[in-house]
Length: 302
Image (cartoon, rainbow, N blue to C red; front, side):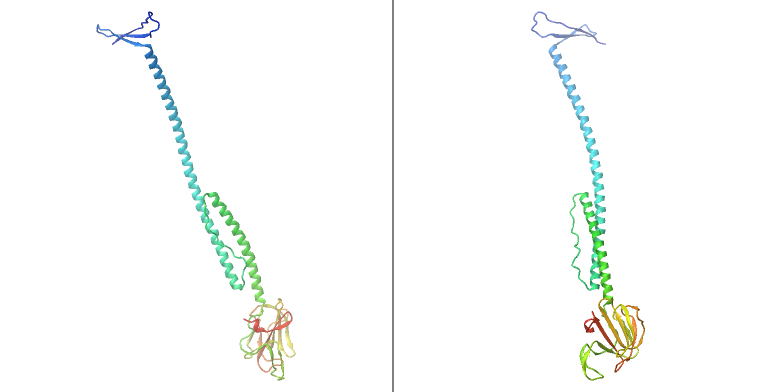
């Protein structure tokens, strides 16, 4: 064990000189050691120590703040990664839905073109195909989908109106007497001719189709039977009002299969071919009237 004794010696002879601190170390041996330290050095050491403590404390505080900021940034990065993942999933769903909507629009447009072709009409409005969309954010993609949905809704309304128009068109076409009323040979056309009985030149208001007795006679178009009976010159006669300014007349039949008031479809059998009335042989005399005036059936029949 060392015994320590600290003595402080102050020099009072010269007040301008610095104070010293004297440290005396008394070991177990007889030799005494004396260490004199100027006070200014001690003060400087204490000051340096305090500065070091302050710097170290500041470093610890800064380190703690940096660590907290690092954790916050890591958490923020995790949130951004998760948000980006969600956005990618949303964009994928948006793309899938957009593709489905586009396919449906394309299907509607293709069906519309097919119906137009079937109905033999041209539409002035054509749906335009969608262009590729550049998306930078999910919000833009969602706006694109909303636009697509509105376009699809408009297309569906347009298509519904178009289908109604097509149905009306088909309904009208069904009433046009453009189907040949019988099979056989065309023996006389519309216009001036020499009458086969009187041998005089007169005007023939229809066409004659010859075939064997009992050949089926068909309605040239959909309509309502307004006459079914015998009429001088025409023999057994049927007249159909197609309710679209057209009427069709079927004469010289051997048998009538429909009555006044009956609604008939295009292509329905309405009579059997014969030679009743003023006729020189078995045939069908067929006339078409438009707005009350006879017209050449060959300009209507397909």
